[in-house]
Every structure is written in C-alpha cells, then in structure tokens.
Length: 309
Image (cartoon, rainbow, N blue to C red; front, side, top):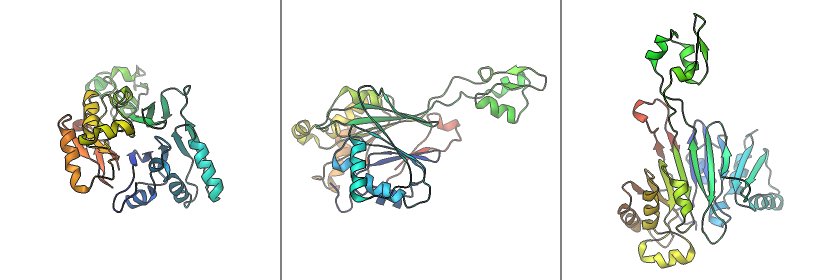
C-alpha cells in the first residue's frame, strides 16, 4: 500500500534511449517524472497482475504521457483482462489519449514471448499467486563477436567504414574485389544483459526459468522468515526463499522488492541479512535508486550500461 515516503512496485529499465517498465503501482508517474526516466522514451509497460498495487498507476501515467505532442504508440502487455481494465477507466473518466495503445495479453496460445523489438526480447511465465500473475525476463539481443583486426588486415580490408560494416554483420568487398564475410573476422556472438522481474508469487519452478543466469533479478520478498506460514497462506515469499531461488537459478545479483508495509525502515537490514545467507550479492530496493548494469565483458566494452530505476 502507498505510504508516506514509500512508493509502490515499479521498475524501469532504460536501454539505448528506450524505457521498458515493469508494473505501474499507484502514483508511479510521480517518481517517473522526478527521476527524468523519459516519457517519450517509454516503449512497453509490462503488468504482472491485476491487483491494485501493481496496475492502478496506469491511468495517471497514460494521462501524463498524453500531455506531450505526438508521443508515439505505447505497448502494454500483461494478464487477461488488462485491456478491459484500461478501456473502462478511459471511458468512465473520459481520458484524453493522443497516441495508440497496443495491448498484448497472455493466453495459453500466445507462446513464451511477450515482446520483441530491435533491442530486446521479453519472455513471460505464469507464477503462483492468489490471482493470475506473470513474471518477466528481459534479454538484450546478442551482440556480434569480437572483431579480429589482424584477420581483417590479412584479408586486405582497409580500416574505416568497411570495418564498421563487418562489425554490424554485413559482407563487404575489398578494393581488390574480394568478398569478405563477417564470419571471417568476428568471434562467436556475445550475449546481452538479462534482467528478471518476479513479484507476487510463492515458490514455483517458473522463478528458476525466468531467473536462470540473469545479471540482475528483482524478486519479491514480502515477509521475513518468522512469518513464513503467512507467506505460504498468502502466496508470497520470504527473503530467504527469494534468495534461495535466485541462487539456484545462478542469478548474479538479487534485489529484494515488494516488502510488506508491516516492516519499518529499521527492519530492512534484516531482509538483507536473511537473504544474504543464501545469495552472495543481495540488496534491498530503495525508492528512486538507479542501478547501472555493465555488459558481461564490460572491461573491454565502450557501450553505455543498461540502467534500472
């Protein structure tokens, strides 16, 4: 529930000038604006489920985005009934929206992919909560393999635009008329970054599938271990359960989200401590925090880091 100084669940992934938003709890537009995440850059909103603390911020965010001229279409993905919910609010409030809303709802026949564009793909899986709920995994597309300058020179490809074309995966022709393919000068593809967002669920195999090998996992940890029975009854997880799931899935970093409002600021260290006994890289999410995620081969890369807010 929204509390003074404590906002609801929402994580923005900012990548190459585009924004991918996980969940939109009540009032999300306020920190979104405060943090200058970028309304025009917002490309996709991914809703986990139709509980108020995860979707009631959509009307405010949509209306805020409508205040700019020609903001471009917005894709909204999530559970069945999401389009109906937004449509009813729009009609009942006579909301002014000056851009296209494109909905994609999960069904048994939609397959594992929730979204794909030139930058990322997003997959989804049903979780185990008191209502139908989805978890998400965002994957940056693989990048071309490392460029072998010595091989290019040996093939008499001159430095300059032709090297750039090869690195983009294009076949080129040398001044002597010889054809050179990317496979001749590039190493194996290098994987992109991976982020998982899993909230409002009890332990389920779907968590492992979504978090397998990710660089950063946002997992719900509604309760401390002393309230494990309540967590089980309400289909939520404890910090320890979330950390064990992340460790088993070999997630590199874990961020604990969606803590019960019964706990106060002084309790946050207990969440980190309980989770830290199961996972080596744990932190508790803080309102407005920005996390930069470098490439797996960051030591050799010049690509800006992916950011989450």
